Image 1 (tube, one colour):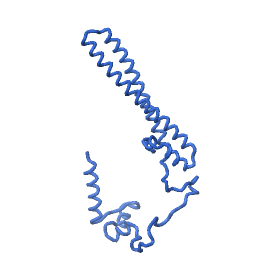
Image 2 (cartoon, rainbow, N blue to C red):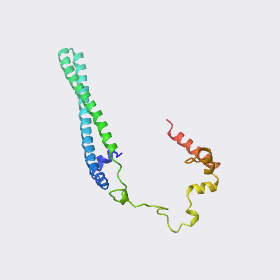
Image 3 (tube, rainbow, N blue to C red):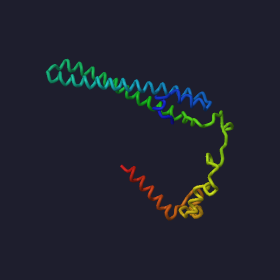
Image 4 (cartoon, one colour):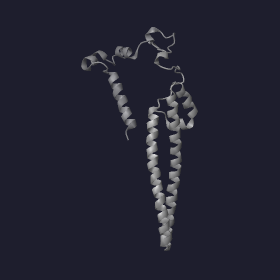
Length: 193
C-alpha cells in the first residue's frame, strides 16, 4: 500500500513510478486517492474549527449563566448544539472518507523500484539467476549458500529437520540454537511494553 504521506509530499514521483506499470487504471485510482485525501484534510480543518467554536460558545454560556443572563445563555446553547451536530456530521463523513481512502490505497500496488525494468507484462521482464552482483574476484569457497555454511559449522541440521517435520523446516543445533534463542529474547526485551 502506498503511504499517504508520500502521495501528499511527492505525487508526481508516485504518478511517474506507477505509470511504468503500463496500467492506466492505476493512475485513475491514484487521482481518486488524491481527491479523497484532499477532502479529508479539508474536513479535518473544518471539524477542528467547528470544535473550537463549540468550546468557545460553551465558555460564553458558562459566563452568561454566572452573570444571570439565562435567555442569552439558552440562545448560545442552541447555537452550540447546532454546531455540535454539524461537527458530528463531519466526524461521520471523515470516518467514511478514511475508509474509502484506505480501500482505494489498498487497490494500488506499490511503486516499482527505480532499478526495475519497464515491461508491459511478465513476458517482458528478464529472469535473473545465480549470484547477483557478486564480484568475480570472490573465490569459490566464498560462493557457498548460507545453509551449506551453517551445516558445515554444525549449527543447522536440515536432514534431521526433514525427518522430523518434512520440508520447509529447519533445526538449529548448538551455537545456532543459542543464537536463535538470544535473538528471540532480544526481540522480546526490545519490544515488550
